[in-house]
Image 1 (cartoon, rainbow, N blue to C red):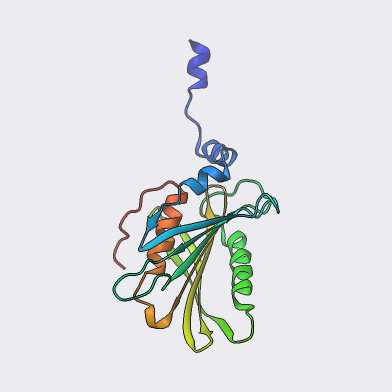
Image 2 (image 1 turned 90 degrees about the vertical axis):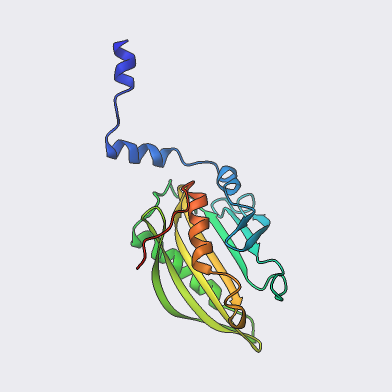
Length: 200
């Protein structure tokens, strides 16, 4: 009985944090947390990079359906979950961990074929319902004659890096809310409920 009681002793906050890091869920479990419909988007295909390049995880595509006179895919999004072979990362990892990931995401987003341009205009923190945040870059440019807006956010969730890209023509900017989508995705992957944020 004494041994059982000793085993049941509550953990210190430091021990709880270390236990959480050791208990990183499997990538398949994390992907299963992503909803089929969220913030006006519908889930699409999943691309598994992990089998070909360990550490590169998976990407899940989302798009808005046809509605209100707008065609399907008026806005598109990508959710990337990966670890780059690193040990488990805590949710709300510090800026020195997340900023290089966002920098790389912006570089990837702005290297485009002729006729397409995107450039970063602002960078900001996006508050999440659990009290944490993701760091986001807002990009603006054009794909041919179509003015385009893209939001790229980076953070950590479920022991891994999380990147969320949302792209839409400027004329369709009301078709979806990129912030709402990103918050809902982060909450789902962290297995946390989506709660209303306090008014700013």
